[in-house]
Image 1 (cartoon, one colour):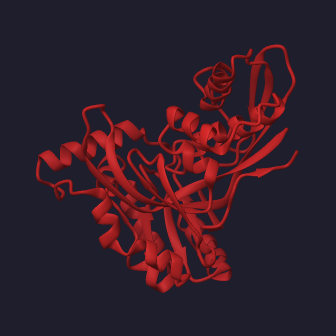
Image 2 (spheres, rainbow, N blue to C red):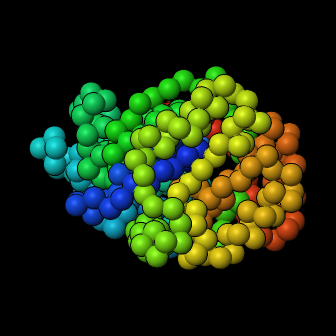
Length: 302
């Protein structure tokens, strides 16, 4: 059983104060990209995992991998042994703010559900996804959606069309907890605005209306990410990458999620490909990739 699950970007990410459970309340608009990881699950007596692909080097192939934990969680929920050979073809950059690990976890849930003949309803899979991580529920859904809570409470919307983006991936990674902790520090020091109600921030930001309009010029002025100052504080080179994208003609640019990938909005596919080549030539990123986003969904290949 083979499944492809897309990466994501956040068109807006509003971060509230730290909650008693150690998480932050967020408000966000997710968009799934035409950039996927592929996971194949085959019958086996025990659980094994192999990771390969252009972005697979150095990734763990044991319980430290979220795909492994997803298969274990699903088996425990169903009361069966977790027997499967999992093979991940990794194309989504790692620790990049693109939810590649969440995509792999969602793919494992979908593939193993079918491999083991469970046939769980989407609502149950979404509940398991929320246990695994904040972005896994959206990875199961794809398309465009408004997220609340930790990001696991979703309201899907239907985008009028895809937008074109250039992903500028950095050579290193950033820890999501470290970026959130840095945002808290910056707020306590008064170096960035204090936290506000994230749901209200998304409502006031106008990003959703812009995304639904299909107009890239309208969306360009509304991209926002509360985590961007913290990501730049931890990885100052991101400021240079954002400046390079603007200089190369992007309509707008923003750090994706907790970074360190920067995403740049283009007018159309041709503009995105031209922008990607120009960005690559600047040397400000290790990879510049033109990709459409907003309508991509998980695909079961059989």
